[in-house]
Image (cartoon, rainbow, N blue to C red; front, side):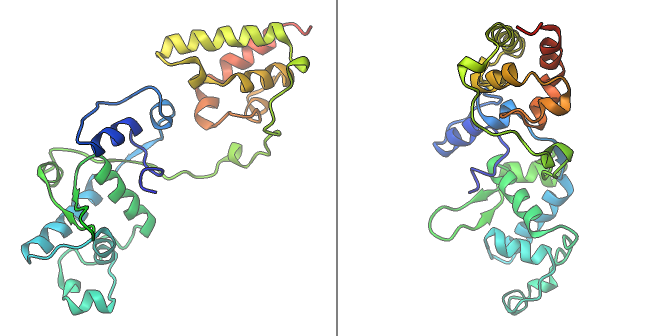
Length: 241
């Protein structure tokens, strides 16, 4: 689940699992081809790492769930019985939701900014990179949580590809040429821009506005913003056959 919900380059995560390093972007995974908007969470990361450090001073180590409970000000029996409600960081992060803290932990783990044991019960511990964050030598960027916008609420057209016999073949060729041009400009494989099925839908439905373009299968917010105007303009300029 952590891997599926990550916003980091997936190749980098995979190789780190095998103790190898990779410098993104890979130009192939979803997170590199359609990067999500980031926001600075350095202060919150410092709060979480400080909590891990204070527990370590007591010779105690706990997993992410317990750390988050402390930060959010829980007074559960588990927290109080260990006097963790007396820590200076207790309740310091109560203004952030549980999922926001979980997202931050995932980010810290994927970026190697905190360590987690893998020998049964996973507990967090600081590493050299953690101290860089604590000292303000390194920032922490976390993907902004997706919020449904107008286009996300639009009713999309059926996700079945347009049959070839119903497609404007000359327009389809024009769109493929434009896709190749954009792929070369961005150093990406053409299919990362749009799949053929998406181009066929464009050639059949001929969207004349960005709003219409957003209803085509395979068009998300990022691709609408990045490529929408150029494809819509190409469709407008191509005569109907």
